[in-house]
Each structure stands twice: as C-alpha cells, then as structure tokens.
Length: 147
Image (cartoon, rainbow, N blue to C red; front, side):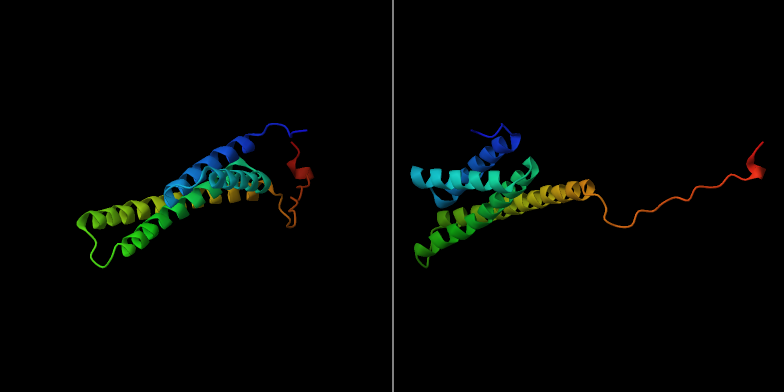
C-alpha cells in the first residue's frame, strides 16, 4: 500500500530532477542508467530524510551550489589536458566558466543558507521552551481599591 500523497514527495521529485540535470551538465552527459540511479537515489534520500518542503529545497539548492562551484574546476582540468599553450578560445571558455560558475555557486549557496536558516527558525518557534515558567503574581485587592 502506498503512503498518502504529500507535497514533500512532489518537491523531492522536482529537486532531484534539478540536481540530476545539474550533474548531467557538470559531467558533460552520462548514460541513462546512471542518471536514473542518481535520480532515484537522490529522490529516496529526500523522501527519507526531509520532513518538510523547505528542507528538500535547502539541500537541493546546496547541491546546485556545489555543482556550480565544481564546474570551473572541471573546465580548468580539461584545459590542462590541452597542453601548455591553450588557444584564446579555450582561455575565454575558462574565463566564462570561472566568472559564471563562481557567481552562480555563491548565489545558490547563499540561497541555500537562507532557506536553511528559515527551517531553523520554524523549528525553534514550534518547540516549547524547556525553561522555568514564570508565573505572574496576582495583585491582591485591598480595601482601598474598592470604590
């Protein structure tokens, strides 16, 4: 019997699709079987670990940020394989990769941190305080207070 529909499941699927497409771009393509295994594994982790939609997107955007930061590094490794004197076109490709990779990586990691902080605020406000409860002292009415 399948569990009831939850919006967390739908967002886990969408987040997994996004991260899988990012990994496909990062690696320059991979087989359909490897993509399906990566997608299903990531979806399973999201469904198992993430209690809310916000948690799913915090992790998804964090992974996108890591992919964006890894892209310029992989481009530089590819450039090193071309030899000691790369062409001007290759250097322009590396410059674009570093510029946009760092920009988008910092953006996604910052966005992920903001979403993560939002999940922490919700957790703190929903948990009852464990400290001592303060009781207000009731002011006793005196004879002077009566009209």
